[in-house]
Amino acid sequence: MRTLIQMTFLVGALGCTGEVSNPGVQSFELQGAGGRDIAEYWPDIAVPLSQNTRMLSFEMMRSEVTRATNTKWLVAGVDQWEKNRGSLGGADYATTFADDLTPSQQRVVLVRKMAFTVCGDLITAEAGAATRTVFTEIDPGAAFDPEGATTEAQIRALYHRFYLDDAEEADVADAKALLVKLAPGGTDGKKAWRGLCTGYLASMRFLTY
Image (cartoon, rainbow, N blue to C red; front, side, top):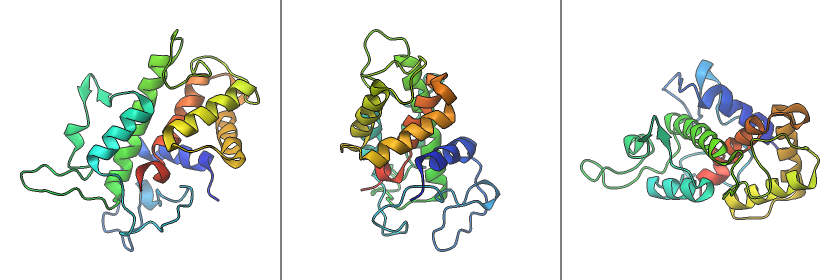
């Protein structure tokens, strides 16, 4: 199975650049900068990635991102959801009256940029805070023990908050490996937890139904 580590590094390498090449994608393959398949390292899903796959509608996506992260998508204080309604497949009710739910390379890259921004703002807001909504088990701005009980508890809590399901042992192991890869020894909590949050938020498991 493709790993969460590979998926999250791809988010960082491609999802935040906004670079998309070769718009003439064949067989619905999603291509990123340099012609690389930006879906290559996503975890497998039950339905093959094609026009049969349905992404969340615009309003559902906005609602779910807000629910999971308790964070608005802002850039320089400006809301980005309405600005990107059309790019995320949302109907404008002037020229289009139904959401486009099929995945596209531009939409996936934009979602990954959104996830990176939202998760960064979430970590900034909750790091060092006396009360936290999402990171209920651990301070995301502090150093952490990758093998500690509180780290595992936070992984499980984060997984359940995003996916509304309990994490299996393999899911926990993947998350721990990612945290260590991003912050060896648990020295940089902000970087590690932002990476895990981004990986969860930009995953096809979160984006589809």
